[in-house]
Length: 457
Image (cartoon, rainbow, N blue to C red; front, side, top):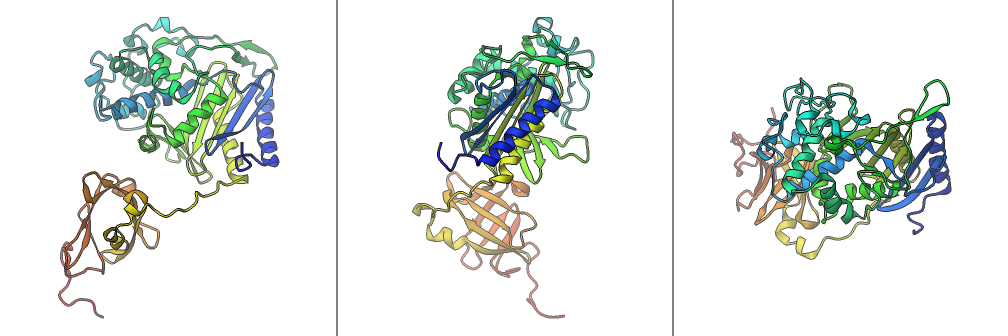
């Protein structure tokens, strides 16, 4: 570990204090946590009995859903499905949810019930629900598909069945071969492997405990079955930030971080993408997931801007909000030791062709000046000079040197076309015409320019 990656002593002390406080006030037998900065583990802390080992397994609950989503996105990137496909296209025997799209299932907007048919699936064996039809109650559809965010554990059971159908192997086997093994996550498993923490229920009004059942949830496994460690989830968090061509590239992971459907609460500061919870925390956008199972809580948050990952576990059913703790640990490091910006470097010579350089500078949409910049990889950015309004990055379209595709915001998916007319070169962006001067009379501006030109009243 280099000096650049080591945390300052006062930062380490603050992190340790947060973990110790969470364990003591939350009355959990143990709390463990870790931080990864710029791809390197920089801190691990623990408080309580038998909690010191970063390789000790804890149940991670619904963080499992992010792993399931990665497997579905892998199928999409391999051309085996489209996120706009309805579930029944690939899983025709699905008992419910067949009209929902895969994107809706991934983003909890398919309108399905929040929980499986009773008894409480998290504390009972999966043998009680041997088939997909057995996980749904009498009224599985709670809302019209695509209308709103409604968290659904059974929805992810359907996605797990989809993975099994298209890969021809059990969900756990596919996960191990396609994600865990490439990322080096040797201590993430469907059932616990020693050393692992025992899950406890703590009496609300006495310092007394009783063990929670250790269950195999069967068909519901893609919703919350996995066990993992601080070290392994740190590796997974690094992957969520950086990507790994053996699993998913950074572009697909960025797609997973885009909010899909807003929650019902109008005051929300959180949302959900494709298998990732999203949160706005003191101006920082976080992506990750929280999780809970009887006897355990867990949290994993990443911050792309700060290139940070934070993980936290507790082995008590309630008392410690491990998701909130992980977010607090991440903020502690970011506030005390802000990330250094990546060094500026000149672009490759091949990207600095004269005609591309000639495109840069000021362009006008009507009377509003915009700045177009050229970046490495022939990527463009176009944004209003005053910093407000609509702006976006644009990626080159393969096989067409003068067309780019919008990557975000209002222009996401829209085409930017640089038209090289001799009289009045212009940019055509989804029918909006950008010119070198306001309302250039030589350009095909919709409605044209007044023949009298510019003047006074």
